Length: 245
Image (cartoon, rainbow, N blue to C red):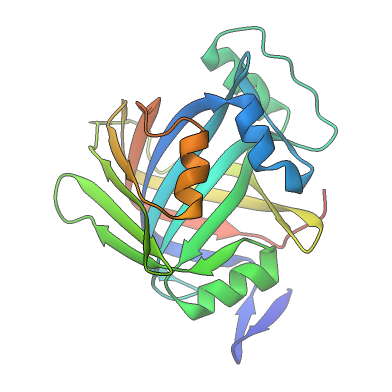
């Protein structure tokens, strides 16, 4: 079993999250603009419709896990694995199904957190682009809200209105995450077991600030209506050792 020493603490693989609350909003954005954003990774975005890519903004309250409690915000793009080819020819649902079959995964472009242990672990073990930021999560009310500031500047204020319950929660889902740091692209096998899923079309309000990441999101066309939003009241996750694809 692989082990990593992080801040004097031995972290055994795989890393487990036993309970987290996760909220996300997904947007259809111009594929050419998304390609420009992640060009440094040498990965290509997956076109879920001709000329359209999928960008997801998420925030999470990690309550119990091997890296301790912390808050996290993330920007990810659905990306094709290296060497894979997919030309969208059907509808959105059919294209997403085909992309999952061919191994498309979530390329993590930015991943601010508010605690030092997960910051160092994320960067060292998986090459995730973690940075320290001020993440104000407000999840006790029906509306779920994240106010994100970095270096004293507002990045965004994201509000999500939960939708209707989704049946069949608790099923284990496997997904590959991709990261890129120090010139190396890595694939991270990632599994999730969600409970208490709610989803809906739209359902998000977003206000962008004056941080460079906010400008990057504006160049993708945000703020705009979300394709869909989802909230998960209890999520268990497992992160395995990173591999070079």
